[in-house]
Length: 504
Image (cartoon, rainbow, N blue to C red; front, side, top):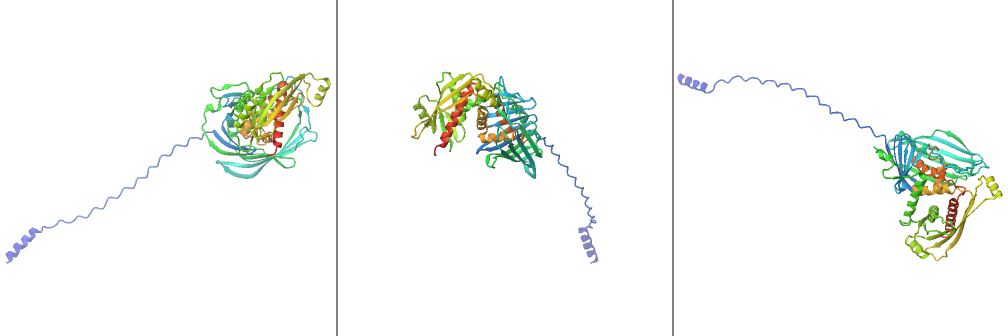
């Protein structure tokens, strides 16, 4: 038994060997510290913004809205006006370049170029003094506009003539605007490019005494209004200006140069004549605007025997009659019946037929010369007189044609040329009528006036007018051309007065 148990025990022991001792688990290795994140590479610095600007502005004058664009940077500036006209100011070269896209031509205007003068200019008749007071105020208000800090400024200019002054009109002009400091828009603003218009010989000129008080106005106007009032406080005209876009631009050099392939003309007057001719040729190719009275101008006749240019006579009528609410267009037909048919097709309300009836020249007598000298005029070597016959024919109404006459004579001074060109250029380039042009000229909005020449668009417009107004040698009607032009201007004025007096 004992043997059996021993054998059984040995067998069991053999079947269950002794297990080795369990080794304790090794402690986990410590985790490596996380690596510090690699910093992202710094972005490259932004390239410097170009120090050139593009400015789009909206002008509202006499109910007409106009958009203009200014490109500026450093010593050069370009102002693009309606009608395909641009003024490039090259301050580094001391000149401006007037470009007309329609005419495919340009003219170079040197800064401070002397105006044309007559052969024997008479000194202007001295007038009495006119006191011009200007008060400029910073309201302290500030506003962010196009990322710029704008200052709110107000300027009031009053005109107080002496009772003996030639121009006895009192008035007040109020300018209210927001201004910012942008050197690139002010460095070559074009103010210094304005030519001083030559005083026509024989005119009465009032010396101006100017008084300034308050702050010095500087900066570029992002928004402003100019309102003129008469002596009673009645509003005469209003200009409202607002910048609608102001952006940095990288501008190409050709933008500030005369366009390649354009014709270089002798001066601004030659360019203006070409531009006016093209503009007048385009009249009548568009539908008549609501509220406008359209006048068809037939080719003028000439019974003077002097072979005066029919194109020049009609151009004068077209320029003068294109004044709101009138709109004049040329007619090309020959006979009266054909002209009426063409006028109906072109939506005309009236047809105007004009004829230069007479153009005479005589030598002034002693008494006439003394009278002219006493009135401030010089003594002409010849007296010219022109007479114009007119017929105004309704196109649709059964009313009878109206016959009229007009005349002009040497010795009757007129601002015909200056005012006529100002109105035509204002309408052609800016949509302005005479009242608004007067406001700009008298308020000094361009050039060195209350805004300090800060608006390059108005400066450009003044540049268009200055050379033309100053170059006319015949404001006192001392040539046959000037007398004929004045007679047709008087004829146009009489036509408009007569039509305005008719019941609607």
